[in-house]
Image (cartoon, rainbow, N blue to C red; front, side):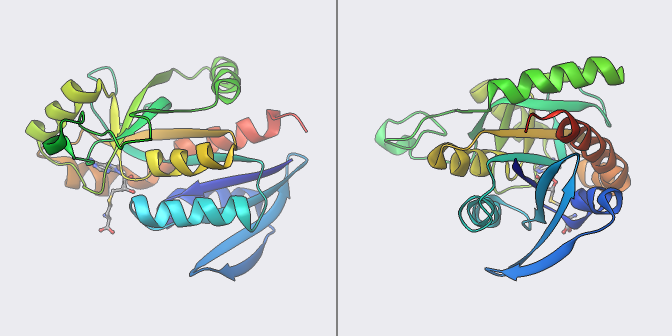
Length: 230
Ligand code: SAH
């Protein structure tokens, strides 16, 4: 099977590229895509750059141009749930866009007419992840991830997102990637390791923990790849 693995930042895919060792690079649509084989699968790997627009472009290219049949996102996120500590892993059950606001017309926050408030991650990939977590002896948290074009570093904003969407973690790419995959009918999975807790100290924590948390997520994703059916 051809599997897309994407991150938003270089730090999120570096641990994957250094594990697979041998790959080719192709420039396409303003980005670089790395291809290799791993665990009996063909992989296409890329980081999109930060945010919903760049991540939607990269995901679309991976599906349409590189013909990926499933997409796994690996990266870091700000934790909302008090159960989530820095370095913990959370997989998205569903994702929403916390910065979509056409509430002036009576629509709920995050809702786009003819769309859905939440986009659900693939159930089979989530159950595979739960098995991998048990075997690796890792606590894998499952919850709603809220996406928006904002680095959230405020308790107020974080609490609003928690209250409005019942979200457990937040980041800047998951829902846009999920939306692309849903529209193309391709199963997807979003995994994030916590880098900060999206409050006053978020930018300092992010700088301190980006690399280690990104590695935790990448290692788990590669374990999933090895177990995916062909
Ligand atoms: N330090 C970077 C910017 C990081 S933006 C620079 O200067 O270039 C944060 C990235 O990590 C995004 O890709 C997002 O998906 C994720 N993320 C981690 N913590 C976050 C938070 N508190 N709010 C929003 N996104 C967060």
